[in-house]
Image 1 (spheres, rainbow over the protein chains, first blue to last red):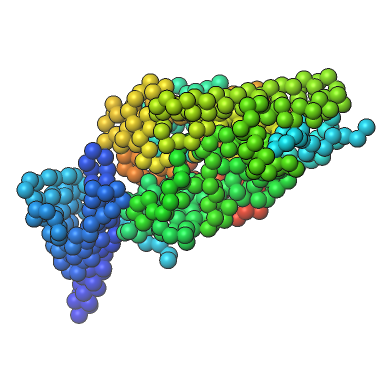
Image 2 (image 1 turned 90 degrees about the vertical axis):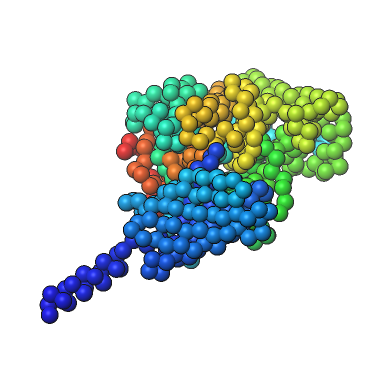
Length: 129
Length: 458
């Protein structure tokens, strides 16, 4: 009985401390220079949903793209369709959670041509309102 | 004989020239000697520095390798400060976290909020409306407490155009990009770009007989401002001793020289020849160094005449792609700051950083060569220089470039490089500077956690 109880507690604790990607990430797209974009994720089990705010050609404007995917074994795979694009375009984001809590990976913009850019991201601190 | 008042001015139609400190004001000087207050100059540059990048930090492109007093400025962008090293305190490795994004919608807006953070160390409210909010800036805290007895409690100067209205990007009002001095958390102060306007502020705005019409009449007149106050000057000269006469003559010559340079710029820009800065007011020199030096010399005159003791000076504007050929490199500022982490491009950016610092070296030289009380203006001035951005290629606010120059009436010893522990807010350094300036009852400033020790190398 004691063994079962201890095992249950250990499982619960593990579930509590299991890494999650939930949060707002300051994602730096490593193009000619680092372009900061907002990646907002919510994890439920292995399922992840969220948005990425991609910059447009107009300085200071962004377009929000809805994303769906999963986070399993430390790897994030998530994608979404760019609504209203001239040509059908999909965004695919892959990344790995690092030991220091940051993430890094590759973002692919798949349209007529495919463009891939590496990225790194740091989760925003939670602050008092 | 009744001593001359420190506030004596030479007056004429539409002009009023405050005087430098004279022996004839001795009793006033004695009073002033009781609590001596430093002059304060706050210089902001945008886009961080090459030395804030990983490669730049390793190569000591901003902060010297050695901590303490035995540091070498030669490899750094501060090398033009070598003649003033005994006056310079470099504080490296500080962060400006208040310029970081706090929410998803703020991500990417670093260029549009950073300048508002530099002297306030407070996080700006994201708005394009009139409900802007940041914090009261360091210069304004000082001016409000100790500088209400001068004709102008403070002046705000800039080099780049800062007159855009509405939103500038990412949901931020242009005010956040354009103003570094905040009289209160909701009142940013406009900055003056035109040297002519500064000159008129200093020498025509206060005292009797200085209405806008009179000032306009004076501007249309070819004569010097000195001609307007000639009778008043002659009367005063006759009452002064020999050394005061020399001091006054030298000062008036300096006023005339600055005025002459402004008139020359206006004549050139009004000649109809194509300008490099076609949208700039006629009094703004197209040449960056000429503009900066004029602004520096105006600051010097303002200090000599005690018209003000507090200046904020914005050298650049975020996203500006101005080119500085005099730096020996002709790449545009903003693009060069996005160096992609490449060493060759980081070194190019460092040349621009070094060039900007060299402009301040000019001001330090002028301050050092101007007597003030028992020492020089540099002995009695605190000049802080820095940027709210660190590695602009990353748009981050870590390891921001910063130094302080001047002895600030004995507050700073100079000749020191202090390296802060990782994660130290620059606000801690600014809190210590505010304490040194006499606001020692201030418990905190911006996001400070405690006052930084400005005397002990870490």
